[in-house]
Length: 156
Image (cartoon, rainbow, N blue to C red; front, side, top):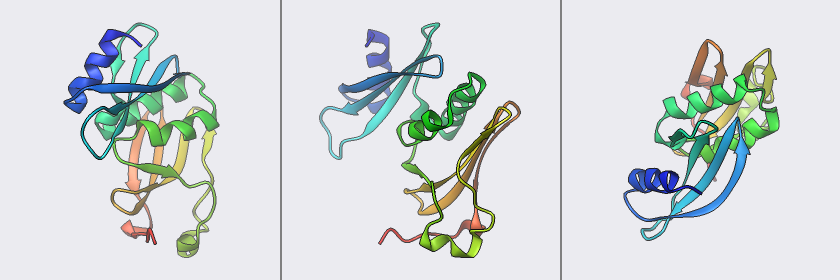
């Protein structure tokens, strides 16, 4: 952990931060942090590139998609991409790995996460909005779209 990562994340959180873990990801290091004082506890990440540039992918959907796009360009494997989504997303998102009961009306269009020819595509549950989204990132595309006409799913 470098001082610039800690300063960046504390500026984003607006309070002291504690490092939880770190791992190599997409040509850099992804570090998971949590706020030290306020409740509820919030987990966010910094991404430090090999050049030393520090970013907070949780800052916006744009920075989230940009990091995924960079990871795809660097041939990050499908499993690592899927595992990173809950960590780097600005809202809580969960990758949908199989057809779920509420998906019966549009199960024919759904597919598991896939990485083909430099393009990553997956379906996620956006737990903040209770909607299903499709994420698509590649060399010329960064897209997050509601699917199933914005149908909401039940968390119960």
